[in-house]
Length: 116
Image 1 (cartoon, rainbow, N blue to C red):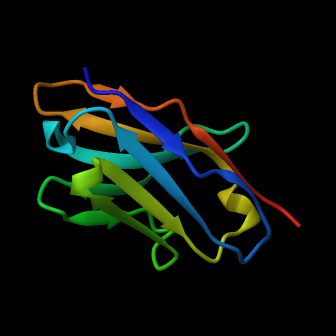
Image 2: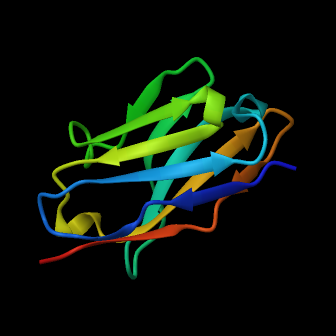
């Protein structure tokens, strides 16, 4: 069974950068797509970025031009590079994989706080 583990969260000042990692215990090609979601305090979880099996990417309007999703196939890891961070980017960030066989797998989340 594939498991996902996020890392890289923390406290950063506005305008700063962070890179989140999502390491899969199995082959990332067992998933047809991998996503980064986030859940701000008191709000619903929202989709931030997606990378498909073919490598196509898609982003929420709120992060376009600032965030980049990428993957390292050899390391079975997906990344979220976050630049020009804003206080409204503060959230728990989750990695999700859509399994080929059906269903989803989620990581445990990593906290990102943007504050001066």
